[in-house]
Image 1 (cartoon, helix red, strand yellow):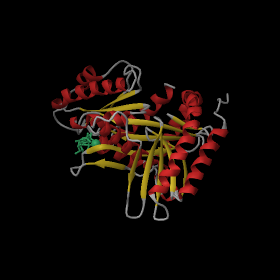
Image 2: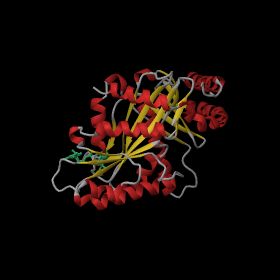
Image 3: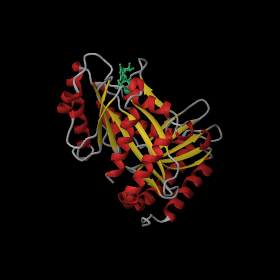
Image 4: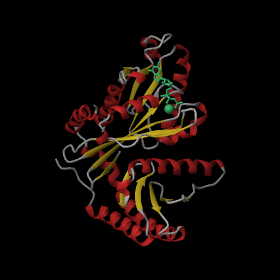
Length: 160
Length: 190
Ligand SMILES: Nc1nc2c(ncn2[C@@H]2O[C@H](COP(=O)(O)OP(=O)(O)OP(=O)(O)O)[C@@H](O)[C@H]2O)c(=O)[nH]1
Ligand SMILES: [Mg+2]
């Protein structure tokens, strides 16, 4: 049985939004991840980067600073983080409570520009996230017994 | 679990949990070394100068498409040292399953029990029920002298229906078996 899928249009909207952000902010690469570090979307010159690892560590970074905020007596976590590097910089923004937007940029851009367009993108992504939310619950519907068995076989072949 | 329907990827998060120095990082290092390089990402270790886990270790292992879906397993370890309690809860967020790495040495029995209790507390804090959460137990360091008999470890740590493995993580004994059991457990619970 073919499981019910969320409409492709939602993912197209995410991609469009990330691409527009990449373009307008003149960034090197843009990632969308969930707060537990799983990569949801990416665009730009991410190919040379290990984007799943980047998603995992930026989510960790965001989670750690949320705890820092709590320890400081802040009522809400920090809404964004910015780290400036020698060649590249990174701007991480929360998208509601479930998603993170990550923008990596170099000297072709500047943080002011990135911040403005990131804010616009966050607003758009909040709408999409709300529509995508109910589908997360249904995720398990695609994983059945046959799938589990095939994964077990695949795993046997993954190790050398 | 996160499914990207457009790219047709299934992401699972498995967390290695346990007391300080039980061998969590050693497990993931061995898995990384044994995984076909085309199927794995970099092994990221956020650690102290003394090689102790400070925040987490991370690696991604992916398989080819199965029934049109590409499974991706995100493996994490938590820091076992008591002072990093807050970090352990952060790493557990969004976990689909846990491998609990126990240290078999007799003098670590109490540390094992304390860490297991903290796992339950952390799961509850995240709104999960420890009794139904996919869990695999690994009794590590079986090569050392002065280790507890399995029956004792089982009595102290195991619950009904939890798969258990003996291991020597430094030599890779039992490591892949444990991982496979954890992945199976997560998938069969869905
Ligand atoms: N003899 C023996 N030593 C082991 C085994 N597994 C791990 N070790 C050693 O135990 C020490 C701690 O291992 P780690 O993998 O760093 O432990 P950890 O659980 O990640 O520790 P934290 O990150 O501090 O929580 C290292 O010196 C390992 O080589 C084992 O099966 N047998
Ligand atoms: Mg470690």
